[in-house]
Amino acid sequence: MRPLSAPELLDIWEAGARQPLAARALWLLSAAQPDTSYEALAQLPIGERDAQLLALHEGLFGAQLSAVAACPQCGERLQLALNRSDLDLSAGAAPGPLALEFDRYSIRYRLPNSADLLALTGCDSVEAGRRLLLSRCIQSVRCDGGDQAVETLPDGVIAALTAQMAQADPQADLQLDLSCPVCRHRWLAAFDMITFLWNEIDSWARRMLREVHALASAYGWSEADILSMSATRRHLYLDLIGAA
Image 1 (cartoon, one colour):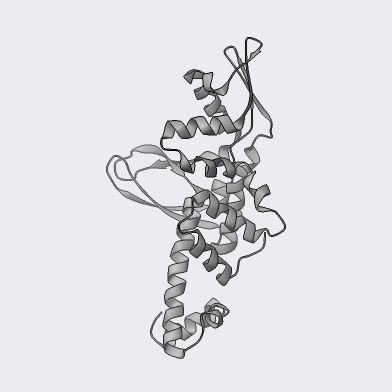
Image 2 (cartoon, rainbow, N blue to C red):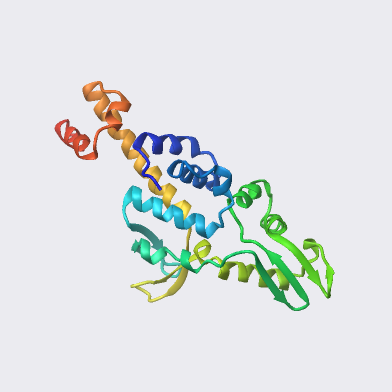
């Protein structure tokens, strides 16, 4: 995975601002892995995709991730300092294809991928999205020896399948075990890698454009010239004009 330059990252940030998160993830990985096709990346299980995004984050911003969480009981805000090693569960992902034997049902399926998530963007309800996702990921259903349609699966079977999918791809459903230092409440908080990474990129891009504006206004340099500077040199110039 190669490092992304400042101009490349700004271009992806600008183009991805109005796109679904799954598309943003694929654009980032495509840029960082030019030898791998967009289509191949779109077929990666979500956990494997997020493990690669975690590696990309380390290349862009370092191994430590800083986040904020609010206690659901008292509202206290917690500052979280996480390391890549705390979040990288990719070694636990199960290989495919996968199977579930539950009650009288025998189901063969694969794990969800980014192409599936992009297909869900047109769904008008959570239930419609769940059904569409299952129809895309389930490869066969048999009950009492006969083939069955995905649409006929009982809720109990769907719940068992959903739980097994989560166990098979733990990286796709990261849960942080948090404890409030004020009220001692404990809870699990979901951690979404692409949302976190995109927020980091958004903050970086806006800060970078402010720096470009300040230096271009002071010296008349082009955006390309400013972005080609090292961060050290750029910040020295910002110090000289009192814009740091």
